[in-house]
Length: 102
Image (tube, rainbow, N blue to C red; front, side, top):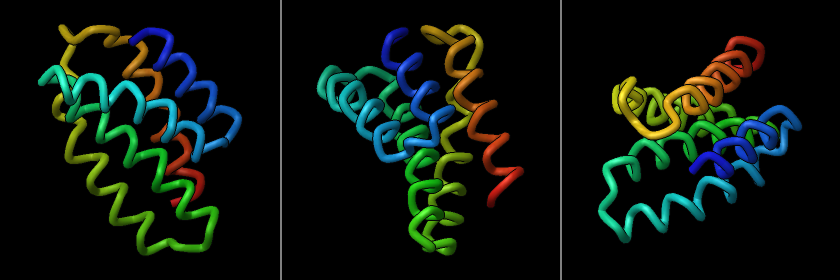
């Protein structure tokens, strides 16, 4: 999970939102098959990155809808989860992007 989150954050920093989606989706599929409770949180982060990809494509309404979905999943980002600090860093990056663009 650590490597996935580090890549995801780097993708966000590079504003490569499509790659951020792909990075997180690979881990999401793995966790979903294992019924890992983090799968839903990963799905939220996928939606967060995808919101900015849609925004880049001029689809602001779709971006806003996906952002709402992202925020819905943030309640799952509790302190005792695996790699909490990296999840928090990824969220901070997404929130910074939201303030600037959405």
